[in-house]
Image (cartoon, rainbow, N blue to C red; front, top):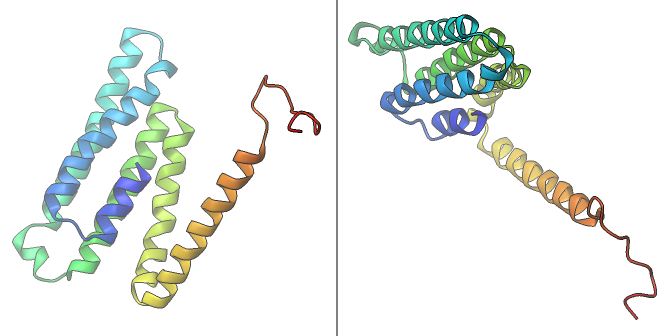
Amino acid sequence: MLLLALAGVVFRLPVIYWVILIPVFGIVSVVAGWRNFVTTKERTGLVRRVALDWCALLLAIYLLYDSGVQGVMNRNATSLEMMTLLALGTFIAGVQASVWQICAVGGVLFLAVPALGWLDQSPLLLTAATCVIIALGGVAWWVIQGRPQVGGQIPSPTSSL
């Protein structure tokens, strides 16, 4: 979810991308929260609440892309506004579905909005941040590769001789 939203902002994708992304996020929210509700009534309520949440978000996007509003905003501001709305919708859907992971994605999206706005002003800083992320990913991969498999045998030092 996080990567899809960040891709939309970084590549400044058109409004149709955001409109398609909203039902995807809604479905993910319902599927993730489904197990937290037992009865049919509770599950129906979950679907109704999440659907209303994402429909309200679609309405907000429609209003932002209305010709009267669009003339006032530039393309960078529109992408960040879409991400802000998506962060809000994701956080609320996570709360309604009782799934902390979806709430966390919404929180990270909220934090990413000012960070992306700031980084958009500095290409050199964006390049440095990308290098740091790649380096951290490499270190994480190296650490994971160095661990023995769960339930597996730890090789003895003389077994390779």
